[in-house]
Structure formats: C-alpha cells, structure tokens
Amino acid sequence: MSATAAACGPLSAGAGPDPSPTAAAAHDPFADRDPATVLRAAYERTERADSKAAVVSRRIGERAITARLNFGDDGGCWGQVTVEGAGTGEILVDDAKVSLRGDAGFVQDPFGNRSARSSDTEDGWIDLRPADPAAAHLVALCADGSPARTFPAERTGLRRGPDTRLSGRPAAVLVSRGPGGVEITDHVSLDPAPYLLKHEESGPDGRHVEYQALTGPTG
Image (cartoon, rainbow, N blue to C red; front, side, top):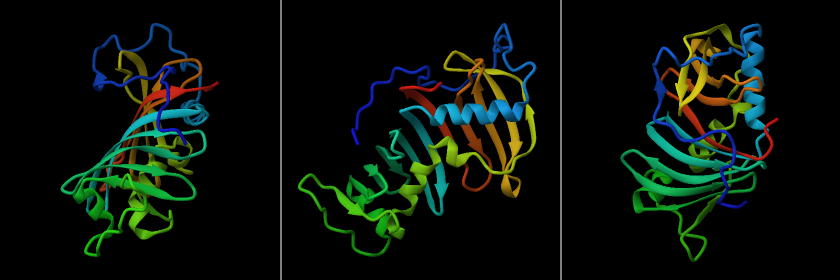
C-alpha cells in the first residue's frame, strides 16, 4: 500500500460551507429525483474511487481524535492522527495489521496504563493485529472514511435542506435520522452523477468526515 496518491479527482480541501444565497447550481440535477436514491448513489460513487483522502474527526470513548487519512482501493488507510491530550503520530491500517508510530504520548495512548510495545522496525513502527483492543480506535477511524460502511441500513425522515457550497462547489444538504435517532447530515455534490463531500453525525461520538480528493474511476 503506497503512502502517496496523486489527487486528480473533483474534490479539494475547503474551509466549510458558504451560506451565500447563490449557493445552488443554476440547474438542479436532483429536481425530479428521490433524495434517498441520490444519497445512496453518492455514497456508492465515492466508494468506487480507487483512492480518496479525508479529514476524519470524532470521539471514541475518552479520546477526541482528528485524522488526515488516505484510503486505497484495497480498503486500507494511512495518514496522520492526533489524539487530543496524548500526541500525534502516523498509522497504516490494512486487513493484516495496524502499524503506528509517533511521539511518546501517541505511542503510549493505545496501551493505557500498560507499558507500550517496543517498536518492531528500525524506523519506529509498532505492529498490532486489527483485532487487538489497543488498535480498535484506529481501525474505527479507517472504517469511518468509507461511505459504504457509514451508510446506515435504516434512515428515517430524509429531507433536503437549503443548498450550500463547499470548496466553491454547489452542494445539496440531505438530513436524516439514523439508528438510535442520531441526526445525519450529508453534503452531496450537485452533479448529475453525485459524490459525497461531507458526512456528519450528531451524538456523543460526533463523527465528521470531509472528503478532500478522489483518484481513479468514480463513474
């Protein structure tokens, strides 16, 4: 799994929504389409990208985490992770193992009151099994970046809110309720073939995923 990916897709980093009243596209490609169909298509199209990048932030247990991750077409992820109050490091996650390295606080954090594992490589990487409880929060971060895995099986009350802009691009705002009554807000590009720009969930976990780049086929 390569730790670099050339960002050539339609997404780019942004500072957040633009509340301008001119945010909507001149032609609304969703005007005669069911919002649920549009939303699922956006998730699936984003998931089909060979690689993608995202800023993922959420609370997992006592940890407030922000990560800038890249996602490969094999389901793995890699990038920089900051755990509030602990430290900053790097992770590499795939089906076979979870590797991490970073400053002393970041390396110690997964092990709690236990002694941290010694590094397994000369350049400081520590390797864990994906099923190891010490790696659970890092595996969860990787899963958070996948639209296919974050699309709840059941949504209720799906409605379209006022359109906006993200990174200068017109976006439809789709609001719904997920399992347990969690409010979910998805920002979807206002394109005939939509893709996901941002996913947010309310509740104690406060999950927030903003996509920054797609690479490879998305059609």
